Length: 161
Image (cartoon, rainbow, N blue to C red):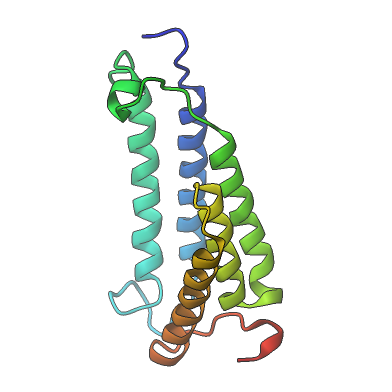
């Protein structure tokens, strides 16, 4: 294994994913339902699947750092360098935390539009106008679909819409 390749970052990311998945699974068990037990049509089903998927991804991520670690990440990724630019995932995590902080006070539609625009910028997009329009349409469309068609109440913020 190349001395410049460190598995510390991926192992920490995998552990963070595992903690997130277990926390989500624990929170899923606290969802109350009118019916007893687990059912496909109940409110616990999708969070259960998402939690198990995150846990599975975290385990796969951890296994990848141990199994065949002598294979360079650069060859796997098709790049010359296996170094991760950790500022990008850190900025995305920061924007996700900002999204969570904005969700209730600003409402789902606006918080989603801001999150999409900021995340697109962090990932390299330089078309602010297009990203803002797509984020606004995504936030408003998703909010409308969940509220009107699925009956799920999302945070509306000060607009009350």
